[in-house]
Image 1 (cartoon, rainbow, N blue to C red):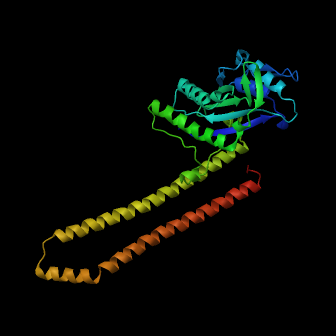
Image 2: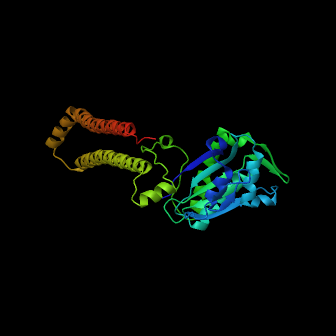
Image 3: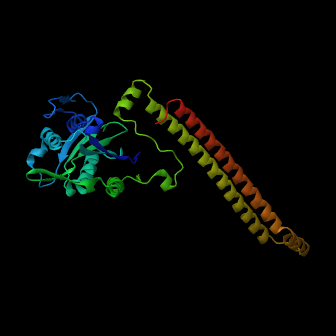
Length: 325
């Protein structure tokens, strides 16, 4: 099932990270950091499907080499708390073929990032699982034929990130439509969509590998808790829909019965009795049925609220015990 997941973060030295290590991990390659002399070797990483670098036309050809690119990024930054690059992680629709997943990512990266002047280093992960995704490392400085220039702060502004998030859904939905799939994703939050469901969390490759080996994790436990809550919500929604459907059927039956009675021939005495009944009872009978329906809906609403309060208490208890994030 196609899901929407878009995360953007800064990779910086203040958190003890390096662009060379991040690039090696996401590409499944070995990269030596010329600034520190440390070699980062992830050639044994098993979840890598492919990797590639996309760059603007005016960027030097040497930046097509991953080790050269990220070592120059490292050397260009002098501060011990420097921001080195941005990273975008997107979940790719599992409905698409592997080639279609890659083409979708390339179209998005070219349209949103390289056209603005960023160099993008893409790592494609977990294509043969239910969690295919791409890591996109993005340079933060302007670039020309001579190399890197000044940092472009506007690339990190909140409104720019908001546009990236929205545009990713548009690119993915066009790809799904071209491939003949009905599934669509939505960049809006569940609350904005009016969907009564708790958002699921991203497990990540390491957690999935541990869980597959039978090792329980806190992230896995939280994911299972959210799944249980959402199943309970789905059952409540089904119950409410059934109540509404029953009320609708009852109205249809009443209307059909009334229509049949109006079409039946009757004697003058029956007509007189019917006319008398209609003048005495119809409004009272309608009000009574409406009250019964309202009471039924209100009881269901109260039951739903009680269940939600109980679930909130359970979540708070789990957080107090160390299962919250």
